[in-house]
Image (tube, rainbow over all chains, first blue to last red; front, side, top):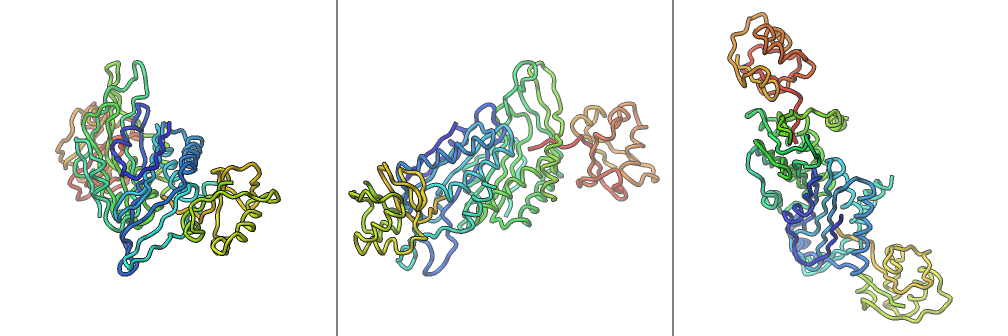
Amino acid sequence: MQRILVQEEDFDVAAENAWLATPDVGGIASFIGTVRADRDGAHRVTALRLEHYPGMTEKALAAIAAEAEARWELTGCTIIHRVGRLLPGDNIVFVAAASAHRAAALQATAFLIDWLKTGAPFWKAEELANGETAWVEARASDDAATAAWKG
Amino acid sequence: MQRILVQEEDFDVAAENAWLATPDVGGIASFIGTVRADRDGAHRVTALRLEHYPGMTEKALAAIAAEAEARWELTGCTIIHRVGRLLPGDNIVFVAAASAHRAAALQATAFLIDWLKTGAPFWKAEELANGETAWVEARASDDAATAAWKG
Amino acid sequence: MKILYFAWLREKVGAAEEERDLPEALRTVADLVDWLKLQSPRHEAAFENARLVRCAVDQEFGTPDTSIAGAREIAFFPPVTGG
Amino acid sequence: MKILYFAWLREKVGAAEEERDLPEALRTVADLVDWLKLQSPRHEAAFENARLVRCAVDQEFGTPDTSIAGAREIAFFPPVTGG
């Protein structure tokens, strides 16, 4: 059972956990990514713009969720990714996995966010305090995190 | 920054995430343990009773949180454990870790729940459909999970 | 053939989408890139550093070697940065 | 000395807490267990299978070898099962 959403609106974590909380669930692990506000001066991020590839995005996320369900015994998993213009402190992404056993839920959650980082067509641009807009560059550490799962 | 609670009441996950969402946070990982309702017949669990060692519990949880903060660069972490009588589907425990970077938050969350399982003085008794009450036995797999962190 | 551009590739090309009649000789994504670079200075600039460009053929991630035979849409974009 | 019992140890002993004057000869948790087993049939039954009993000395986890010198409270319980 999987729930995949790409949306402009924020998500309701309590409602998402409730959706995953079926009777056979022993644990729900989740990860929320947020817009950091940790730089000062000219490069302070005033907003994040999230662009994606409608149609392909949903398919890519469903494939990532299916891969998690194949690797671990999950009762359900959820991926929600926001798009559009987000402000510092806003939620960007929610991934969660529920299972009878905690290790499966925890590992699947780490897997979901690692694969999402390199396997789904989203692009971030940062609006900076100096008025410029800069596309975020992909990080080698994200590729390494995905590669580690391919072991 | 850590938040440790032992309480009978349920917790509010949205409020807990908000407490962890300081400006330098890039990700919040969490794990919620719930009362499973996956057995049928005489051994169906009708309720779980959670007993603890007041005074020691809080100290043990604070020590586990401090260990997580020493191992990873966290902006905050939370452990909330319920006690008393809980019903199938109820939340038992909430652990969460926030960090600028996702790997730290995810690993610290797994660490918190693994260590809590073997390092904090809680005991579960199951009330069964046949009227008996049975103390839950510790699992070797939990000891192994803790030992893995001691590496 | 529908060709899509995202992020800074969209900005450099100056279009999110275009419809192109492709020469039959084009077999792979790499062939298509070489041909697109000849279509305008903006296309040439967008694909100047091919190492930075990723692609999808019919909404599946591809590589320069991926065949474009029978494809309905091909997208070009920088490495993804979601999450 | 305050002695606490939790979970099935509390049920077997029949008390959550007791105050005991200990002989000075008792040095370690193991000494205390041996002495407690002599205090009543219920204590003997509770500690019958010592392998299943864990302890804390002044609210820190201990082992049979842990010293009880100067301790204010000692607790006995089964392996923990929280989370």
